[in-house]
Length: 352
Image 1 (cartoon, rainbow, N blue to C red):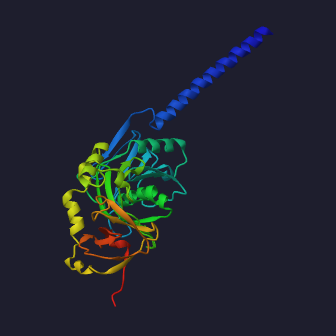
Image 2: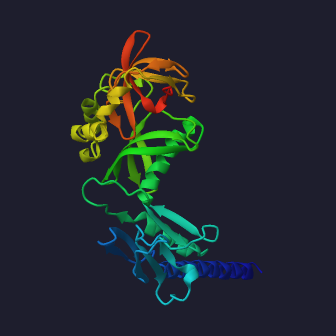
Image 3: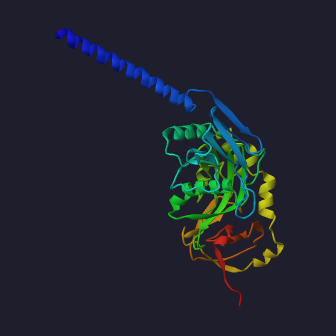
């Protein structure tokens, strides 16, 4: 009886070991089938500026740049990946920047500005998708450039700014872009923010952003509302940007506005006739901040804040000959101090 028990135990142990070995072999075969245990290939496309790794037993089919609904070329390259011999099984495709995709029906992973998606619920396909996304790299145009008004890249930069700044203001913000330069995954932006209905206007927002695999993120914002008074370099553009470049050495220096560009922004729209504004009265219209800054120079970055002029205060304007796009800096005096105010926050009195 004891001998039989021992024999049954040995048979059970042998069977368990055999099942374990077979299970391991099956798993290894499946892993190899999905490319996890095999070598991965490198896909590179110079036209698209796109590169990633994928399993050697998978197929890549390029679809190119789709035509958008507006008739222009899409910004991101589209393609599909599928396991060899499974082209008809579109549910298990992996799609780069699909033309139409319902995220409620499938899953997407962000890799820079690329959307990598699938409808599949297969764990092996999802694992492959994540690894493809993790190895994806993009090559941007050489030198600094300004993304177009309708580009996904511009929208992604503004979305990152919205997440960082909009929350602190308690509402969604419309950023009127005054300056934007992008190079090698870095961007410098200068904006004039306001509420979407135009009822609230805020101090200028300028900052440095960096593109990471998950998207753009704000790395630094220029202090506003008088905070520059605590930093002597903040009031001087050249010193400020030198300090910023030392802090972020990988940020390309050509994205920052140089002296020529700053002069162009300020003087391109200068209208000599604005000198006739001298003597005009205007009322401070800053209901959100409840004040308008009186600055030592016509610049939110260089100009030190001399005083806070309360919302509703009437001012007598001097000359308004330093332009910034559709708005201007005007000379005025408040409580004995002379300086500059931004007329975007002024309501000029009607001349009878």
